[in-house]
Structure formats: structure tokens, C-alpha cells
Amino acid sequence: MRTGPRQVFAQLSSTRPPAHPVQLVDTAVVLGGSVAGLLAARVLADHAGSVLIIERDAPTGGGRRGVPHGLQIHLLLAGGRVQIERWFPGFGEQAAALGAVLVDPAHSAAYSDGLRRVNAQEDVVLSCSRPFLEEQLRNRTLALPNVRLVTGQACGLDIDATAVTGVRYRVDGVEHVQPAGLVVDAMGRASRLSDWLEHAGWKRPPLRRVPADVNYATGFFRREPGLPDVANVIARHRPGSPVSRVGVASLKAIEDDRWQITLACYGEDRPGRDDDEFVALCRSELPSFFGEAVDGDPVGPIETYHQADSRRRDFCPDSLPARLIGVGDAVASFNPVYGQGLSSAALHAACLAAYLQSGPRLTAPARSFFAMQRVVVDAAWEISTAADKARHHLEASWRERLGRWIRAQVQAASATDVVIARRFRAVTVMLEHPAALSTPGLLARALLANRLAMRRHTPRGHRTQRRPCVRRPQDVRRDGEGVGAGESQHSA
Image 1 (tube, helix red, strand yellow):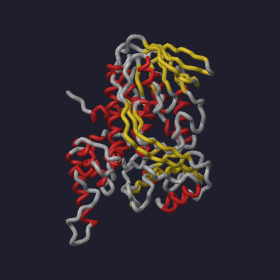
Image 2: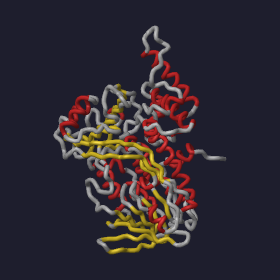
Image 3: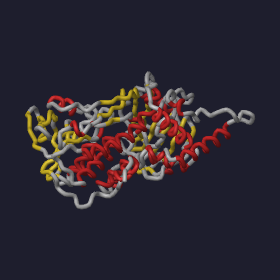
Image 4: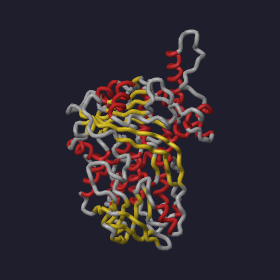
């Protein structure tokens, strides 16, 4: 029986650790010690005699050169958190004991163009900064007896006729060679793996780009200790919204009694780069929670970041040597507005676990791994690039236009219908595959909800007027308003 993407995604979202793992290799090497690399190392620890993580940046509790957007808001979506809890039971409670904030639905809020949405959140969110999350993951991973980290620069692979056999890296200018039975590329957007493969006579994985052109500014402000009345807020505005020029604004309570606020704008619009401009935007163009948060004393300077595009490398296993895989941003990095990077990395670890648990033939390319990973990448790519493609007027097939139209209807209905809102949120937080939004029953419910909303907002005698959010599939190609915008309360 054929298994479709939705079924594969559901299988990967399992919360059960694999039973009776078997050692497959003596040494596995992970290139990169960020979130994707740390989770891959945790999985490999069950199947390798030893795991070596090679990370360029020395471990710190703050921002790192290898994560240039590390001080912007990173929100761990539910799909990612359940995977982290799978590999590190009790992770959330331990993080909370060290300062992270656990936010339940009653302390969360979401807005669209200034209007508060129905609350679809059903889970407890772990709220903390990216450096804090990474530090906790690193501590838990390095506590495993067969995992170690070396601070060094990966500089190449040793590849024989069919497979990777080792990794070359430098520490303080001295080159080392580490034999490896399996190598994982977790070097992020700047991965040099394609260059190394081409130099060794293999094909470069094709690289796809979709312009994002998003500008970020993040500020940290002091807050009162304890859980605020509202600790997690997301506010989105359609292009050209009269409410605010800020495309997305996110506010959350994090460790060390701080507020973290991120403002994102597109194109030529740039959020405030200094304290005064940043505070003014929060007070004048966003829900009142933002203005109240910036009343606290600032903690450090405003941090800015620009991301030009979303990228994905399409790995073809038949064009790769054996004993080599990629995870995280080294495979696909998305517009950060949708907050799917961390959770995608966690699901890549789930793909790795399923692959290794299947007892693969490591002398052959990792076909089943890349097939499973493609399901995860396609899901995040579909959600996160749809609006950017429309905003930049990129050509789209009729299937893509139809998919955008369906998601636009479901998204519009999710503002008022709690059943639809919960299904929509399950997809945007990566608990379900986007195919879950295309069922006939859900679409029918969404169309009815939108028609009722249109009637409520249309004056008597003008019932033939259409609300802008109800579009035909062919209209969606030219208008990015709301399309694929992932109205998750935890996307930033």
C-alpha cells in the first residue's frame, strides 16, 4: 500500500524513542554544533561507538558567529518541542527550572491587522532565547558518555570511489583526520559540502532560492519577575496594511526576567535600528502589550539582521557518496518569519533515527533517509515560500495556485472558527502535514465560515460585495496577502 506524505509525516512525528537501538558504526562525525547538529548527535549516540561534533565557534551563552540571526526571536514550535522531549525527556521542565518560561494558552495572544484572533493554542510553549535553548541542548548532548565536541574548522572530506571515509579539520592551525563510518553535514546555510563534493568529482546538489528580503530588529527589555498576564504575542499585518508597516511583530517573555521583541519588515522597509525608533514603533503601531513591554529598561543594543532568501539543496542520493547525509539549514533554510527552522531540524533528527533504526546498508547512499527528509522539507517549504513567491510575482503552476487559494480560505476562516484554527495551527507548528488543510470537509467548513463572516461585515443592501480575503485560485498568484502566512502564534 502506497504511503503518502501526510502518513510519512505522521510517522516521523512519533514521540517514542526507538526500541533496542543497534550500533552500526564505530565513529560518527557531525559537522556543526548548532541545534540540528546537536540533535543529530543525540540520535547517533544510539548507533555509534563514539560521536564527534566539530564546531567552529567556542561554546558560549550568547550569540555566535555561525548563527548570525541567533539573537533574533526563535520560537520552538510544538512539532519541534515534542521531538526534543522525545530525545531528552523532561527537557522543558528542566529548562524552565533554569529560567525559561512555560506559556499556556491563557497567557498567549495573536493578532491579524490589529484584530485579536481566536486562540487555537492547546499546548504549553517553551519560551526562551536561541542561545539559551542551544546551551541546554549542548549540555544534555555532551552529557552522553560517547559524545564529545571539539572546537575546530572542518576543512574537507576523505572520499573513496563510493563512500565518505573520514573528515579533515583544523584546530589552532593544525590539521587532523578523523576516520568516520557516517558523516552528518550540519554546517548551516554556509555549508561547504557542495564545494567539497564537486572538488572530489561528485555532482553539486542543485540549489534553489526564493527571495524573502526580510529585515529584522530585536530588542531586549527588563520585565517584572514571574509569568506575565500575556507572555507570548504575535501580530501580523498584510502588505499595505493601514494598521502598521511592520509585517510581523513577536513578543515573548524569556529567561533572566527579560522581554524579547522582534519586528520584521519586508523590502525597503526596515524596523527601528535604535532604541527610540524601536520603542516608538512598539507604542504606536502594535497591540498595547508591545508598548507596555518597552516601558522596561533596555538590555543591550537593538540587534538587526537581513535575510535575502530561502534556500534548499536538493540532494539526489544517486549522486552522493555513501555514509553522508545533511540536516538542518545545510539542506533547507526558510524565511525566519514562519519559525519553522528549529522544528524542521528536530524532524530531520527523526528522519535520521528512522533511517538508522531500519538497519540500512551503509555502503549505499542513504536513499530512504533523503526520501523521508524530503517530506519534511517540502512541508516547511510549501508553507514558508508561498507568500514570498506571490509577493515577488514568481510564476506558479496551477497546482500551486490552487493550493494557495485553499490555504487562503482556511487561514481566513481560522480567524473566527476555532475548529479550523486548531487544524491550521497544527500545520503551522509542524504537528501535521499541509495536506491536512486540503480535505474536502475542512475546505467546505472554511468556505461557509468565510461566507458567514462576509455577511456579518457587509451592510444591508450590499450583500453582493466580496470580502478581500475570499479569492479565486487565479487571484492568489499576484497577491501575497495572507497566503501561506502561517498564522501560528509562535512563528517569528
